[in-house]
Image (cartoon, rainbow, N blue to C red; front, top):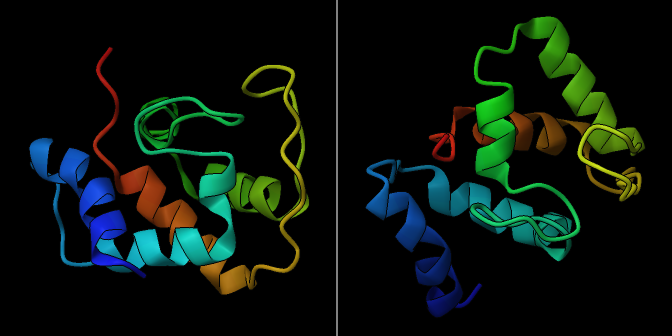
Length: 111
């Protein structure tokens, strides 16, 4: 992946004081998995901004985590408006779990 694309995506993380060592790897994984076709860290596209997801599920327990993994894998609609999330069955389950965990650990958006 190009260093400009990584830098562009990491700037909001660094500005928020959340630049962790694995952020670049997670962003690479999200790009490779096609997540950025519909999502962004800070703004709503077709799907919710990931910081908004982090805010909504900031105290998620294991059951909520598993439900989110299933939603990413199987797709669905209704949690964030009328736009449907397509299934992501081509993305390995372990990658989905890794990305959901990372998204939930992001610093949430402002209230």
